[in-house]
Length: 201
Image (cartoon, rainbow, N blue to C red; front, side):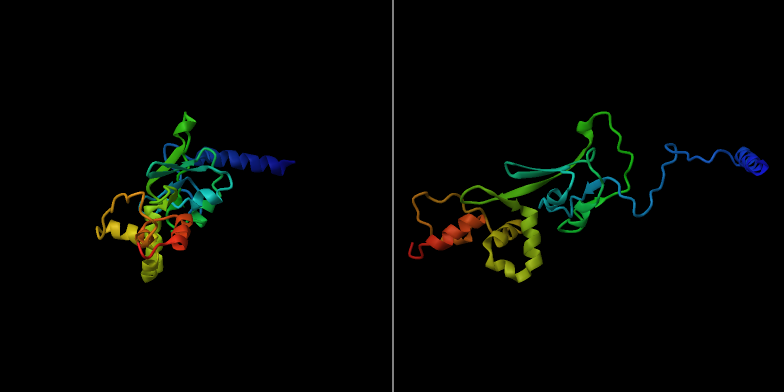
């Protein structure tokens, strides 16, 4: 019975000499461990707006909104489970990373978001969304010289470097011809063009 009392007395005297065993947070921020999984943050330079992070998110905390010629990716970190799937499955491996940010309290949940905007590329025939311009440019760089075989990859790359200009709208009465093969098109329209192409026009 005496030994537990002596142990408690020792701990009490130690606390008097050394002070309480607590941290000075939030006056002094804590340094998280290197493997700490904090708030996911987008990197404007490496994110290509492909939406892979939204596809693999088990908590469905990432919204992909296509409006006009802009795609917005919105991450709601108030619902995030910080599993790291977005980082692990990022196409560029650097577009979204788990940071060491952990002080994420807000008074309004509407403020608990991070977002990134990218320019959309739409089909020049039907107007359907293909993907973002940066995504197409990334694919073109990955496939290298093979990009010349696909105008949907090649044209945005040429536009970026000013090597081509917008040809404008074509007359509605013109048949589907060779010209259409060099347009930025979705897979459905490209299939239709290749099957109905008029090489004599």
